[in-house]
Length: 466
Image 1 (cartoon, rainbow, N blue to C red):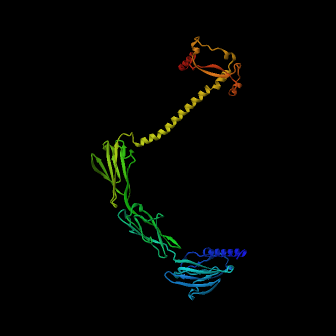
Image 2: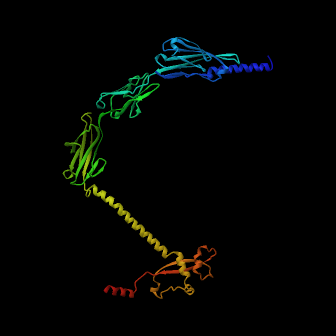
């Protein structure tokens, strides 16, 4: 075979091979697992990815029950049922044309198992016959009912001495799986948490304080899930985190300082269930003495030495556990006590704020008056506004009159031209913008301190006498 005929034959062979591969892998699809509800219907659907009008189909459905043989259920050709395996299958299974699907109208335990589909597909255009086999596993389950949990023992347990056993049960449901939740968080296996094979039982051994919480059980299968009501777990524990506290005196670490003669109360607090009992002990010169029993200790500081050590011992009568902590009480003068220090510290803050504000205002006023009195521009304005004869008048420097020379002097440099002996106040306003000034004029400004004259003093004296 040569030429166009050979090329046509090769293309036909390739098309046939690709068609056969696609039929076996993708053209026919059946789900591998289907979960059905007892008493409900279930469709074993077959999806075909080719035009059913272009092919001829013949096939059969088989069922294999767990531990049983493979049983023929129905045989069909295209859209027509050829035969049923028995009359009892007539109302149990329905063939669904045109894609070879099978409908089970009402599921029961007998419908569970593996369903096999054998298909012979004939493609008239290529005269190719392709065989496809598919299997789907069908489960039939009963929805779970609301689970019920129980706790043993039902009473409060003692930590590190007792165990707790939880059980979860459902009245209805098949293939039920259980999960335990504590405070809505899943519980996992640990050295103190043991689960049964189906997780329906949880054992906590031994129980501890951190096991306190709300427990519930989650029951589920392939088709449903339900949660139980919650149960609380109560545990006797402690004492833990023992500490001595007081609202009197000043505390530094484990040392309390109080004023002489002050009445002081100490509270011994711990995390304990049931509440612990306390014993207060005094330690003096390596000797101990039980002072009182109770949660509160009352101490009058004038009856104490300068420093004395105390001990609080907490005991839980149920857990038979105890803990103790000690502290030192120092008698020293603190004024009128801690309350006075607190009040003084609170009153100091507004006073300090007022003082700082006054200092700030005074400083700002000093800066303002200094700048307003000795601003260079203001000084230059005064110089340029003087009469020409006064500007050119030589300054007397000698000892003609010592009183006239008395004062505070400062030198001010005035930029300007030599020939510009007079300047107006208007030109002085634009002094900063002048760029061609080459000479400097010096002037002496004398500040005479304000001293009262004799006339002023006599006038003040008359006013005082009046």
